[in-house]
Image 1 (cartoon, one colour):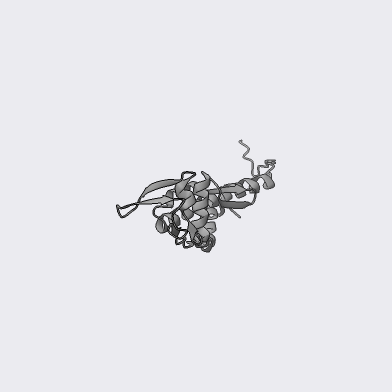
Image 2: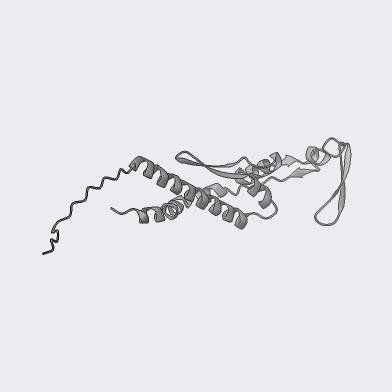
Length: 163
């Protein structure tokens, strides 16, 4: 006669480090959110900018800092950072002569319309004024999308958790 057990007891102890698991999931979600923010920011910049796009993109830095995401216009060369900040917050009218001359006493400038014009230290004070840069406030467009971006970044993580 064969004995068939009617009950099997298995002692199985598996320690789960919930803190580590939660930290790993949070880190993954934060990296996903960083990617979503950067992708959205670059797309909005691409849709808003033309000649200043490359400088703006070179200045844009998005990184995870613990439980926060930091997005700055602090990357790239100083001229890219200056232009990116000017695009973001605007810039009042300014004199182009110091930039155009860069230490020289005079220089011939090729204008966009195909003409040439001379700039010199003796040029009238108002002859090389730039009218300014209108603020695009791209960061505010991205901020408005944060709830949607956060849901997208964390949704697949929550889908993997069974309760």
